[in-house]
Structures are given as structure tokens and as C-alpha cells.
Image (cartoon, rainbow, N blue to C red; front, side, top):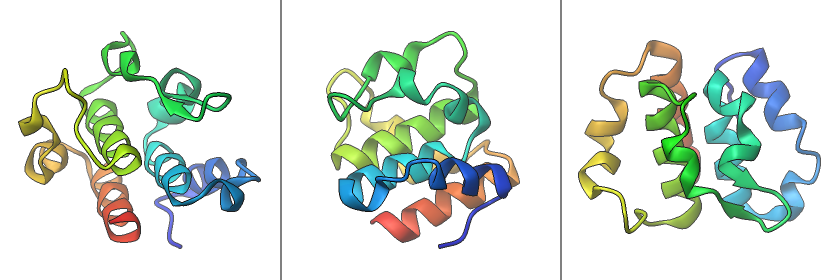
Length: 116
């Protein structure tokens, strides 16, 4: 598995139970790990106790354009759907990939390659 940088790799590796939790968990950890803001606020996006995404994290004040796109991709890869209250057009590959810097775009493309 390829990572966009050392921080991404460390974040993924820090979830030692990742193989026991299944592909959906691998997808959300890998994808959110692409973006620094998402790594820093992982608990605001995914509840490890309930093993559920936290949709309200999409509207958190710390979200940037890039972190929001990465969060949408991670949620989509985890749930295999679009959240009901969200605009489906915001989840298209074009909407997610447009406006991302090179590292975030590379990470998003890798996530799509590994988890779809």
C-alpha cells in the first residue's frame, strides 16, 4: 500500500487493529489520513466506540475545502452511499478531486484505487 507522506503512513499504522476491523474501517482510516486536518480531527469524524461515522463533522468549523472533500470521499467509501442530507453532486469524483492540491488529489486517487 502506498502513502502520500510519512504522516499518512504513521496515522494508518497507529490503528493497530486495522486488519481486524475490515475493509470499511481501512478505507476510512486511509482516506481521512490523507489530509492533516482530518487526521487531527479523526474522532470528530469517526466514533471508534460505535464504529460509525459522525456526519456532523462535515459542518465543523475546522473543515477546509480540501478536508471537506476528503471527508466526503471517506464517508462514501465507508458507507458506500451519500448521506441523505447531503447533495449527491458534492460526492462525484469531479467535485471531490477538483480544487485539491497534489498530495490530497494523489491520496484521494489512491483511496479510490484501493477501496472501490
